[in-house]
Image (cartoon, rainbow, N blue to C red; front, side, top):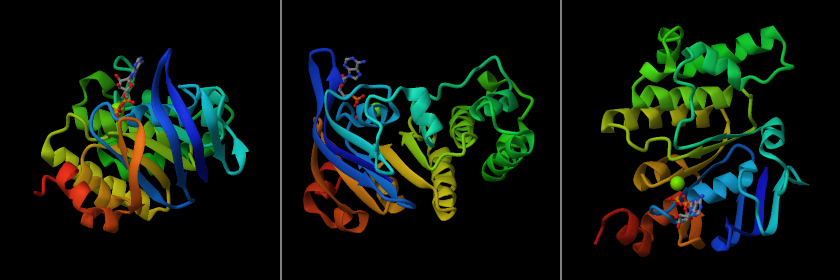
Length: 235
Ligand SMILES: Nc1ncnc2c1ncn2[C@@H]1O[C@H](COP(=O)(O)OP(=O)(O)O)[C@@H](O)[C@H]1O
Ligand SMILES: [Mg+2]
């Protein structure tokens, strides 16, 4: 579905990502784990077309998408949900959701996308007419994901969906992510919540200072002594 080959990307003179090789197959949930500053967001942004790679290739279904502008990447079915939850606070929940469904879809299709977003996040339906800025942090995150789903993506790029959420909301968010996985959605997830991310993901990549240090099936990484010491707090 997505493959990244020898990717190098950064900001101005600063190189952040180096020699990144990664793939996400259809129906897989893949996690990119790593501490703050490791380069997770830069990687998702490069795939989303928001950071231009300086080397390497990014392919979606066999077609190169590196260098393709972000709005066209979305049209290809790749939805990026930033950690900052860029919702529109002065618009209602419903209006925010409808912005995710791009023009050109007919009304019936939009209705059915809205129905699925509400089924996944019933709170959004309860708060449909409320201004988005008045939602709690967890609800805003649901809205950001719901809006991403309104573009009917084949791949969801999720950047730290639980940052800043209370533990109960973190657990609820993960229950919903498990549901999305159960529906067969392909997800690339960047996370610092390592145990929960590995419990959800089929495979994971450990990113450190812009390099992939290790990768493999989640079950194996959970047993990896270096991963356990660095990310699971196990001595
Ligand atoms: N817009 C930017 N301009 C310059 N440097 C940046 C920018 N965004 C991120 N960086 C730097 O890139 C590195 C990786 O950041 P980021 O991809 O956000 O990591 P993570 O998401 O894993 O925390 C960090 O050193 C960060 O300071
Ligand atoms: Mg980040």
